[in-house]
Length: 181
Image 1 (cartoon, rainbow, N blue to C red):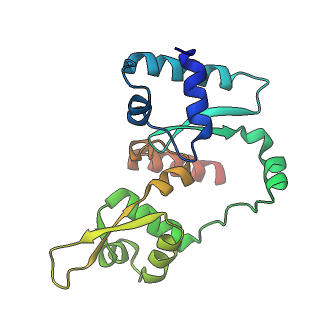
Image 2 (image 1 turned 135 degrees about the vertical axis):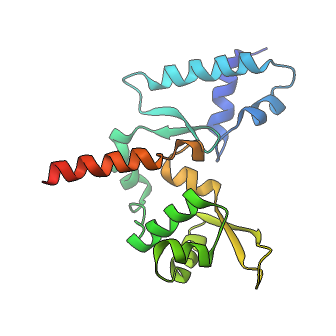
């Protein structure tokens, strides 16, 4: 069989979305998961070395090739990509409420924020950062929202477990207050 690390490299390279361990195992029938993981770890180490313009990152539950941040400006210029449209503060608040309280309804998000969140929810749905996952068994059967896989990719997270805890956020805010004082 071909060198496993180079084969895994090729599979991750051609994928448009993060390649999960499950997907690699399905393609590499009969190859033990530990061997696949070892190949991925070697690839991550190789591409993480200095002197490389790309690296393999863990994001969205799998692995993906990405350009290194040092080259962002030139890559965007070559591909004629505008910077990501930043979310408004209302969009960020709404997204945070959903990320930390999901699954959640529009009225629950609006109650958390203290303002109507209809417009922000619409924007987040259009950007595919959230998705509708059903209806709540409550009066009016309101829609229920969760973050999407695109949310993980947008924030560069592998899973929701990587979101900072409320304690970590409070500590960061306290540190910022101390610096501003």
